[in-house]
Every structure is written in structure tokens, then in C-alpha cells.
Length: 446
Image (cartoon, rainbow, N blue to C red; front, side, top):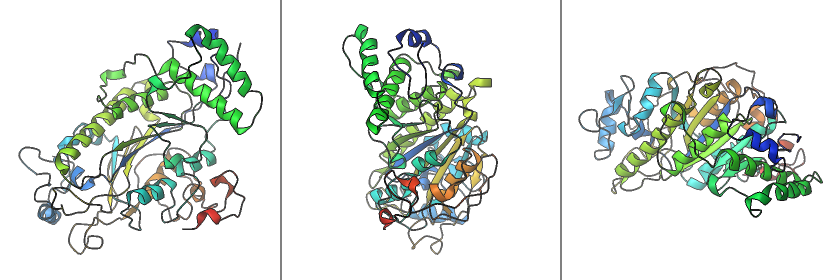
């Protein structure tokens, strides 16, 4: 009999693995991973136009909006009209699948979010946002990595603590050596020859990696674990629950894999997924319509798939946050698009969401726009993420996850237990990267 753990899951124990085939992994077989939430971060790369996803539909702001966007505006009546959220805001019909989730309280919307200091560079804004250190360049670890390193809620025996869907590991998980990175599950494999040989051959390879505890050996074992899990459970036919239908796109395929991994109960803590193409400088209407349809239908399918009863109600363990590096310029440009802006919209989807609209709306009058051009930022994006960390993930070490950020107060986006924020840590702490001594701030020069 082989020992099953994060370090010891092996195809070499072929009889045990074959016996598990066709059934879900569970805490009996793999050691209880706990009842912790899974945090899924969906990053919309390119700068999503939150003003056309959630446009004003009444009052003075509606007049300013129509004047600034004569061709790109979402109308309030007729074909393509905004779907009312309340008396002030509407919702793009292109994202209509999410309206039901908003109406049943599973979707919280946070207006006018972003970084206090504006930065209209895609690369720099994403870097600052994903490291959790706005204005500080070359931070050696991502904010999700520091969450995983500082959280007391993650049992050592979990098999897959973090998962990144896509070609590259995102900056938010920079420095995390346990992240499983997948683009296409069907090509996530280790070819050791004919199928009948794979058990013995992989057992031999694993025995080599188990011979020591160096970084190379540990990483090799983790790679073998990931290959075994994905090959066995994520490469065959999968039937989503509750009639969920994922969009026929890379985004839909990746969401489906994430749902499978959550259902396997491997102790997954953090998952990341990107959806690009939001840099709509020209011809925005068609591009944005297509992207919002893919985004909303995908998120609706994921939530439906996970929304079971009893032990299968995985939405009670899911906290999904959608963010982008910045919003778009308030006024449309001459190419029927919008340029780089500032404030934007964040979304939080969860069985523990409070629902509703949160944050302070700054207004769209000329004197209320940031620098006269953009939606202002009234809520630091780290405030939203901090609430999720504390209330859903049980991690109050904000000084380590978001160094330099203080004064946190919950917005009420999700339910959960409020812990006293711990602001200790920050630049120079050894938690930021292996090899950095405590007190070394050389990596923190801005």
C-alpha cells in the first residue's frame, strides 16, 4: 500500500490508483483538506470598461454619460437596453447571465475601485496590482503567494494548494513553487513510453525524486503529482452538474477544469484564470459584447455547476473575484473605442456574497472626474481583497500580504468572521522570497 499525500501520490501504486478511478478523491483517501474556501481570481487583462458593463441609467450622471459616449452608450430603452440593477445603475444585456446571480444575492459589485495612484501602463498596473504593492517595482512575490505562505488555514497534507490556468503563472503567484500551471489538460502529461510501462517507469522516476529533499527533488515530486491527478481525472469526459453549460471557448474550458479540481476536494486554496482582449481602443462595441458574453456565461456555468446540495454545495466554499488593471477613459475616442482610464468595477461571486452594490460612487460631473477625464477611485482594490482574506480565508496578516496598506475596514461584500487586522511585516520580511534575509529591503526600491 502506498502513502497518499502531496508528496506521495504516485502512479507507481497503480492498483490503488486504478481502484480510485471513476470516483472522486475524498478526505478519507487523501487526508482531510479541511473546509476552507477556494479563492478564484479572474483577471480581465487589457482594462475592462466597467462603465459600459454597469452604466448609469438615471439622474445627472446619465446625461453626462450620454454626452461622453454618443456612439458607445448602453441605451436605457429599445434594442440593447440596459437591464436595471436599481434606480441608479443598469447592467449590460451582453452580461445578462450574471443578472440572476446579482438578484439572488450571490454577486456583489464594488464601484470605483482601483489603485489610488493612477498608472495607465498595462504592464506596470498589472505588476503593481498583482504583487499587491502599488508604486513599488520588482516585488519578488505576488500577493497570493504571500497569502499562501502566511495563512494558518492550509494543512500541510493538501495535494494541490494552488492552480493557475493558462500558459504562464501569473504575477500574483510569483514565487509560489507549489502552483500547478495548466493550459490544456489533454497535453498536461509525462510520456514515459507505452501505457503498460508507465506505472513501473513513473515509479522509478518518482523514486529518484524521493531520494532527497532538495528543491529539485521536491519540485519533481510535485510535478509528478500534478500529472497523475490531471491525467486520471481531468482528461476524460466530464458532465457538469445541474445542467450547467460552459461556453465553447478557452475561458469556458478552463473554468470547467477548475470546477473539476474543486469537486475532487484536493485541498485547493487558490486558483487563477485570465481573460484577455479588453484593451478596446477601437471598434469597442462588438469586441466588448463578445467578451462580456464569454465572461458572464462562463461564470454562470461555473456557479451552476458547483451549486449542489449538501456536501455538493461547493458554492459555499467558492469565493470568486473579478478585477482588471484599470477602467477606460470616460469619453469615447474618435475610433469608436475608449482609451486607458482609472477607476473601475470589481465583482465578487460566492455562496457567501452579501450581494448588492458597494463602495462610494464619485459621480461623472466634470468636476468629479479624476484629472477631468476618468472615473475616480474611491475604494482601494486591496480593501476588497482584504475583506475576502479575513472573512472567507481566515487570514488577517494584511501587513504581509499587502505591505504598506493600513486602515482596512470591511465593505460588507461577503459574510464571515471579522478578525483584527495584523499589519506587522512588510518590506524586508523573509516571507517575501526565499533567499532574502530579514531586514533586506534592496528588492523594494521603487
